[in-house]
Image (cartoon, rainbow, N blue to C red; front, side, top):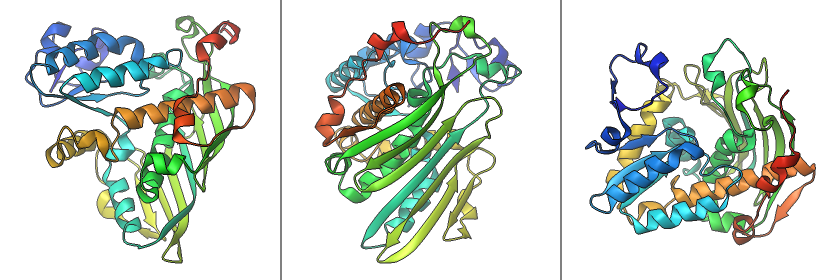
Amino acid sequence: MHAFDPSADHLKAALPDVHWLATEAEFYALGADLFHLAMHPEHRDRAFDALLDRSHREPITILCEKPMAAPEDPEKCWAIRQAIDRARAVVLYDFPELYDPLLGRIMQFLRGFKDVRIDSIDVQRSKDREDPANPRNRKRMVSIQFQESVHCLAFALHVLSAFAGGVEALLNQGCSLEGTSRIYRPPNPEDYPYAVDGYCEYQALLGTTVVKGCTNFLRGAPWAKRRVLRGTGDGQAFTIVADFLEGAKQLLINGESQSDVLGTDSYEEVIKTCGTWCRQETAESLPRGLYPHPRFAHVTYQLSSMLWRSCHDQQSLHRATLADVMSFDAMFAAAVPSLPRYA
C-alpha cells in the first residue's frame, strides 16, 4: 500500500507496512488498481482533478470519501458528476456498511422472500468525538448531518431501494424528514470558522418506511453503528439487529446470530467488495446499478441537506419526488454568517 499525507507523521510509526510517498505527483502517477481519496471536500479537488485528467488516457478506479461536496457548495455535486461522465474513471463513494458482508447477509435473507415489506429502520451511529485525549478528534469536521448521518441515510436508501425498484421509484413515493440537533464542542475550536452540529436526532419517511435515527459525536457518546430493521416477508414478521462497529460486530436475524460474517475488517471489505463489483460490472453498467456511485452519493447529500435544514429551522420537510429532492437547496452558505461561533 502507498500513501501520501503531509500531516501524517504520527501515523508512520504505527503503519510500518505502508510506503509513504514524498509528493502528491508520485501518488497520482502510481500504477494502482484503486485510488482512495480519504479527504474532506475542500482538500479533494486537486487530487480528483489529477486522477480524472489521467483517466482520459487510461481507466482508473477511485474510491471517494463522503460527503460529496462541502455543505456550502451543493452545486459542486453536479459539477463532479459531469466531470466523471466525461472521463473514463469508475468512481465509488465510501459508505463502509454498503460494502460489508453483514449487509450482504441481510440482503440475502430479505431476498429469500417473494414479498418484502420493511416497516421501520432504526439507525444509530455514535462515538465520543469531543474527547481531547484522542488526537483524531482534532480533525476538523462538518455538521454531523453531512459528516455522519449521511451513512445512516445511505444504508436506509440502499436497502429500501432494492425492494422498491430503485432509488427513483422509492423517492417518487415521497420523502419527509424532521430532526433536532445540538452543537459540537471540539477540542480545537480555533480551527473552525463557525460552530457545527455534533448531535442529530431525526425521523424520516422514505416511501412507506419510517426511519428513526440518532447520530451523536458529543462527550461520552457510546461507540455504536447499530441498525434495526422490522417488517414482514411473505406475511411473516422479522427483526434484524446489526451493529457494524469494528471489533464488536453483531448480526441477529430473528434472534439467531450470524456469527460467520462477524470477523471481517470493514476497511478491508471496502477494498475487496469494490474490486468484486468492478470485475462483475462494466464501467457503463456500474453507475446504473444499486451501488454507491456518484448519482447515489448525490442523493444522500441532498437528504443530508434536507436534514440539516430541518434541524436548523426546527420544521418538518417534505418532498414528493426524487426530482424534488434533487432540486432542494438548504441555503447553507447563506446561513453561515448567522451560525454561532466558538469562543
